[in-house]
Amino acid sequence: MRKLLFLLLFFISGHLVYSQGNSQDSAWIRENYYKIERYIPMRDGVKLFTSFYIPKDTTEKHPILLTRTPYSCAPYGEDKWRSFAERYIRYYLREGYIVVTQDVRGRWMSEGQFVDVRPFIKDKKTDKDVDEASDTYDAIDWMIKNTPFNNGKVGVFGGSYPGFYAAMAAASAHPALKAVSPQAPVTDWFMGDDFHHNGAFFQMDGWAFYSSFGKPRPQPTTVGPSGFDFNSKDNYQWFLKTGALKNIMKLTGDSIAFWKDLYQHPNRDAWWQARNARVAMYDIKPAMLVVGGIFDAEDCFGAWNLFKAIKAQSPVTNSHLVMGPWYHGEWASNDGTHLGNIQFGSNTAFWYQNNIEIPFFNYYLKGKGADPQIAAATIFFTGENTWKKFGQWPPADEKEQSLYLQPGGGLSWEKPSATASSDEYISDPAHPVPYTEDVHFDRTREYMTDDQRFASRRPDVLTYQTPILTEDLTLGGPVAADLKVSLSGEDADFVVKLIDVFPDDFTYGNEAPAARRELPKTYPMGGYQMLVRGEVMRGRFRESFEKPVPFKPGKVETVHFTIPDVAHTFKKGHRLMVQVQSSWFPLVDRNPQKFVNIYTCDDSDFQKETIHVFHDSEHPSQLILPVIK
Image 1 (cartoon, one colour):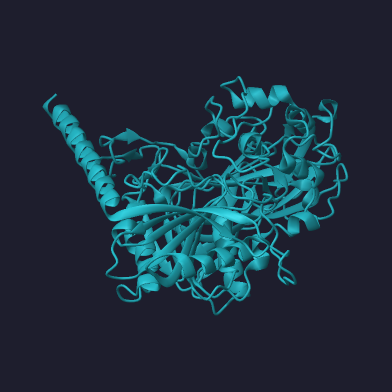
Image 2 (cartoon, rainbow, N blue to C red):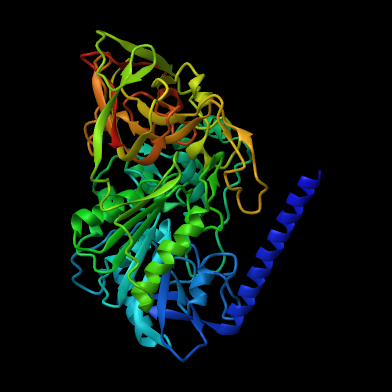
C-alpha cells in the first residue's frame, strides 16, 4: 500500500510539473510573440491564406519554419492562437523561429481548386503551370520579402499529407530554402501509402479519411466537413455487411471527387504514376531530413522510399533518414517509449527531437552549433532497442539470405528437398481473416506490433517457424516474399507476416521505462507473437501493376513482392515465424477471387477458393531477408 501511495504521489507530482511547464511556456510565448495573417499571391493570381507567429525580438533576425497543410491553419483570427505548449514546436519558439502555417491551394481559407497529391510539373512553361513546388516557391519568395526581421533562410517540415508538401517544397529550388524535413510523407498512394499496398485497396483507412476530408469546399471557409455516421462499433461487421466496394460508393454518390478517381483507376496507370512524389526528387538543393515510423500504420512506405529516391536521383544532395519505432507522428509526441505491448527502453521521441531534428534546423537555418554530423541513416532496431547509424541504407554489410518454407510448418536456411510438397487452405471472402483479434471500429495503430496468436489458430492461415534461435538475428532493409502458389480460381491476395515469437517465460519487468504519465509495469509476454512487418500483394499484379493478369487455375505460379524495410533483432531464445494468408480484413478490401473489376463487381462475384503454397525442391517458397552480420 505504501509503495502504491508513493507511485501515485509521484505520478500526480510529475503531472503537475508537466502542466506547470506547459503553462509557463504558453505565457512566455504570448509575451514574446505576435500573430499576423496574410493572403500570399501565387503566380497565377490565386491567394493562399497564411498565419505567422513572429518574435517581438528585433535585436536579431530570425529564420522561417514553414508547414503547408490541407488540415487548416486554425484557429483563424489574429487574436486566436494555436496551443504550442504541449508540443515540441515550443522549442522552436524558444529558439526564436518565425513559425508559419499555410492552407494549401483550395483548402480551408485559401483560394483556388484543391487537387489531391497534385502532380509535379517538371517543365513549367507559363504562369498557369502551377503545382505544389511552384506554390511553395512563390510563398517563400513573398515571405522573404515581406516578413519582418527574417534572416533570409527558410526551413519546411510536415508530417503525413504535409510531408508530401514538404517533399514538393524541396523540389521548388528556391535559393532561400536551406533545410527540409518530410516526415511520414505521402509518396505513392498506389504502391504503399495509406490507400493501396501493392495494388490492394486499404478500404478502412481510405473510407474513414475521405468520407469527411473529401467533401467539396466550394469557397474558402473556416468550418470543417462533418464525418460519416457509420452507426457501428464493429468495423469487421460493418464492412462485411456493406459488402462489395460498389456499395460503399453508393454511400457517397458523386460528391467526393477523389473517391471516384480511386474507383476509376484500379491499375497503376498514367494517372497514378503522375501522383508518385518520387518523380520530383531530382537535383534537390536543400539539406534533407526524411523521418518516419517503423510501425507507422498510415505511411510505413513513404519515408523509406522517398529517401531512396533522393539518394538515387540526387546523389549529391545532403540527405538523411531517421526511422524510429513509432506510430504515425509519434516522433513529434511527448512519449516514444512504447507501442501497444512492446517497450522500447527509452523515450525515443524525446531523443530524436533533441539530438536530430532541432540541431538539424538550428544548424542550417541559424548557423547555431557545430555541424550535427547526422548519419546518412539513423535507425532504431527493435528487439534490441538500440539506435544504429549507417553510411547508407540499406546498410553496406546487409546480405540477402533466403529463408525457405518447409513441410510440417518449419523454416530453414536450407532449400527444401521434398518433392511435390505444399500446404493448402480455403480462402472464403464471407469469413475473411481479421487484422486484429479485438472488436472496435477505428483502425488501431497498435496492430503493427500486435500478438498474432489469434491468426495462428485459424485454418486459413499457414504458419511456419524456425527452431529456437541460438544466436541473435538482425535484419535491416527491405524483405522480399517469393511464393510458389496455385489457385482453384483466377485471383487472390497474399498477405505475408514476419513475426517475432517470444520465449514462453518472457516478462517485461520494471527495467523497461514506463510511458510518461503511467505507472511502471510488469507483465508477462510469454509466447507473444509480435508482428514485425506484414504486407499484402494483390495477385493479379504479380507480372505488372499496369496490366493485371488472371491466374490459370491449377497452374503453379510465382508471386514475388517487396515488403517495406524492417529494422529488428530476433534475440537468442526467440523464434522467427512467417504467416501466409489471403485476407486481412477490414484493413484490406476483400478480393472476390474472380478476375473482375473489384471496384465495380457485385456481391455475387465473391467466391471461395482453394490455395496451395508450395515448399518443395522444384517450387521453393521463400522470404529473402536482409541479414546484418
